[in-house]
Image 1 (cartoon, rainbow, N blue to C red):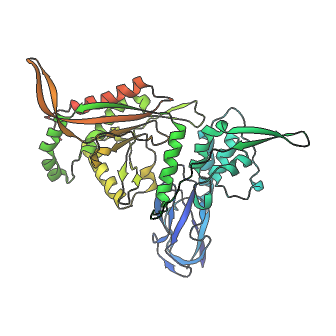
Image 2 (cartoon, rainbow, N blue to C red; image 1 turned 120 degrees about the vertical axis):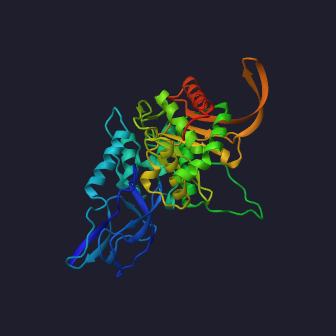
Length: 436
C-alpha cells in the first residue's frame, strides 16, 4: 500500500497562503482522481483542490479556518498498489517556496541589506510573505505587532503591511527619558473615529471578499496620489455600427456583441500609442516597470454586490471576435464564481463600466499595482453642435463621458489627459462601414 501527500498548490501570482474553507471529504472516504477534496480561499479567489491520486483519505493535517502556506502538506492519501496517479502533480513544495522568496526580493529592491527580525519574540502569527516584506523593508517586530490586521483573528495580511509602509514615517514619535537616562520612543497611532449605533440600526458583518476589497481600496489610496481627468465623446457612429451589426454577429459567431469589447479594443490601441500608461511602480517607489504585455482587467459586479476583475491577457493580440469571446466567457464565469486564480491576476490596466448602473461618470480607485483605471459612463442621446462645411448645426448625438484615474507619481496630467483623449478619438472615429 502506497501513501501520498496532498500539497497546497500554487494558486496564482503573489499568492503565498490560503485559508481552508471546507473539507468535502472526511477521513476514511474514498477519493477518485481529480475529485474535490477541499475548498480554499486566497486573497484573490475561492478554489477547489482536486486529488491527483486515487485512494482513501487517511489524515487531514489542517482544520477548516486554518491558514496554510503554499507548498505545505495538507492531507495524506493511501492507495492500493497499482492505483491510478495523475501524470503531473499540481506543484512541488521546494519550487513554490523558492518562487515566493524570489518574488518578494525582486519587488522590494533596497540599497541596504535586509533587516534581521526575530519573529520568535512575537506571539502573533505572520505568513511567510509578510515576514519577507518586513525583513526587506526593515520593519521591526514591535512595528509589526502594532499594525492592525484585517485578516482572520486580526492577522496582518500583505495588504495591511503594504498600506502601512508609505505612512510609517508619518507616525508621531515622542521620546520619554527613563530613570536610567535612556530614551524610549513610542509610536502614536491615529485612531479611527468612533461610530455610534442607534436603536433599530442593523450591524452587518462584512463577508471575506468585502473585507479584502476594503483592504485593497484603502491600500491603493495610501500608495497612489489619485488624479482624475474627464472627456466627453460623441460615439454616434459606434452606436449605429453596433445596432446594425449585433444581430448578424450573434447569428454568425454565437456571441452577443456588447459595448465592452469595443471599449477594450479602443483602450488597447491607445495603450500601444502611449505605453507609459501600461506601467507599475516597484515597492521602493523609485523604479518604473514598463509592461511588455497589455492585459486588460474588466471590473465585474457579482450578484452578491462584491467586485471582481477578470483579466484578458494579451488583449492587443486579439481581434474583436477574440476580445468578445473572452469578455463573455469571463463575465459568465465570474457571475458563477468559476474563475481560476490566474484569470484574475496579471492585469496591467483596468476598465470599469459604470454606465451599466446608469451612471454618467465615475472616479474609480486604481487597481494596484497598476497606475491607471478607465471608467466609461452611460451613453445618452443629447443635442450637440455638429460642425459641417456649410456651418454649424444642432443634432441629436449619442454622447458619453470617459474618466481616467491615474497615479500622479508617474503619470502627469499631460500623459493622462492625452491618453484619455486618444481613447475617445478611437471611439468617435469608429468606421460605420467596418466588417465585424
